[in-house]
Length: 347
Image (cartoon, rainbow, N blue to C red; front, side, top):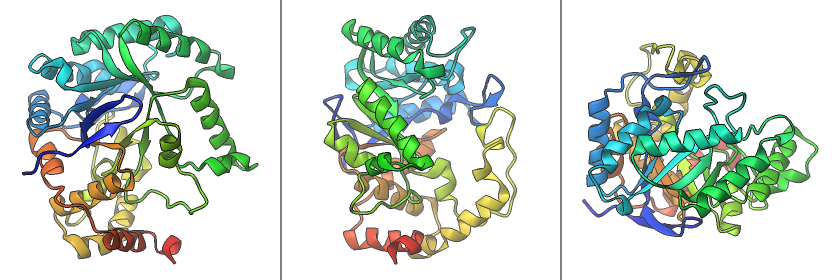
C-alpha cells in the first residue's frame, strides 16, 4: 500500500496524515446528564487494537474529547501514547460539554479541572489542539471571556499548542447579511470566530452536504482565507453512507448510544437514505470498501488542505477506511457524484 498522504495543517503549522483517527466511537456507550452520547458494541481491547493499527498504517492525528465515554476514549488513546514517541503524533481533545458538579462546563475552575483530567487520562504533558467543544458560553456569553483567557494561559504554559472550535454544519459568510434564521446563526458563529480567533476548526462534510454557489463563501474557503486549519468529521455519515446490502432489519440501541434518539437512525430515514444512495451503489459497487473509498475521497478532494477524521471500533474498520482510498477521483467523477446525489442543485 502507498504511504498515507500527509498534509500541512494550517493553524497548527504541522504536517499530519490526511486521515486522522476519530475516537468518539471507541468511547463506548455513555450518558451525559441523561443525554445518550456514546456508541454500543465497543470492546476496549478491540478498540485499542484499532488505535495500534491506525498508527501502523501511518495515522498521526488522534482526536478525542473528555466527554467521549466520559474519559474512556482518552484513556485508550493514552495507552497508545505510552507505546509511541509523543512527538510523533498529534493529539486533540475537547472541553465544554461535561460540567461535572459545576453550574456550567465553561466555568474557569471546571475548564482547569477538565484539562487536568484529560492530560492525566492521556498520560501526556500537553495537547496539540484543545477544542472548545460547545458554543454555549452561558447567558449573554458570560463565560466566553474567561474561557478565551484560559486558553491563552494554557498555551503560554505549554499545556496546549493550538485552540479549536466547531464550525456550523451549514454556513456561508454571505448569509450574515440576511434577516433570516440562517443569517442570525451565521452572524453568531462569525462573532465567535473573530472573538476566539481559533487556530483550527472542525466541520462536518460528506456526500450529503449542501452544495454552495460560486458567489458563496463556505466554511472551508472562510478558514483558508483566515489561515485556519480544518478537520473534517462525519465523512462517512456515522456509518450511514457505507451501508451495503439491505436495510430492512431494524436496529436497536441501548440508552447510552446516541443513535437511540437521533432521527437519522430511524428505520424510515435509513430506508430513504438507502434509496437516495442507490445510484451511487450502482455506479461504484455495493460493498463497504468501494462505498468508503468514494465517501472519503469525495471529502478529501473537496478540501485538499484539510484533514479527515474517520471513526472506528476495531482494527478491521480502521484498516478498511485507510487501505480503501486508492487513487483520487477524477474531476468528472466528482461532478457525476454531485449530480447523482444532488440532482436539483446540479440541474
